[in-house]
Image (tube, rainbow over all chains, first blue to last red; front, side, top):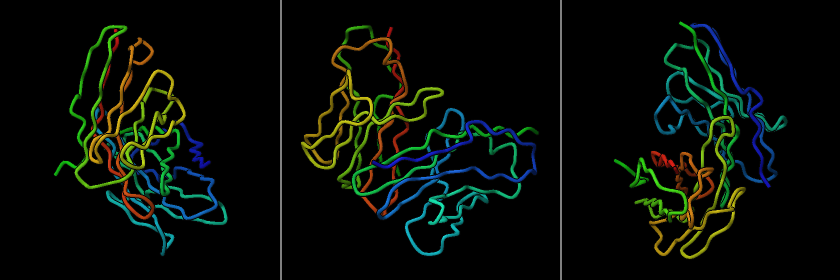
Length: 111
Length: 112
């Protein structure tokens, strides 16, 4: 069975700080990896996705993620966070019939 | 362009009532999922379906059942609602490997 681990449960940063949220997955076959964001009171929105090809993936709102196969990792990064990035971030792994969520990371950005 | 619709956004039900949560997608996806989201517990899979009339249990199926009579509609059923089923329920739709996952806006259920 697939599993997805997000080790940071709550991250607090000041504006302009750099962000890196960890995501590790366990699955030996084809990987489909996603990062979704959930702003307070809103539904899940896709930040970026990786299916194959260039392991450095650029998403919306200045986010990017790097797929490192040898480490089974797909960490989310942003060079300079803003107060509006305060939200919960979910890493997902998807295959033919499974969607597996990480436990989520709550990011709080202080103005 | 709404793609996954959860018709009931906010519901309040009494203990013991039967509750239906509906999810409809217009993308002809085979795979549909029901999750519940609770503070501190993340999103937990209740059931999923990979085709009409096909279903599989997720991590927390107890107290729930599902129905997939048509490809576009996946219903979550609480046969006898209990207060510990107060939660936000989220539907997802997914064509499969190599495709984007689409989520509904969530259904907030309160059982009193």
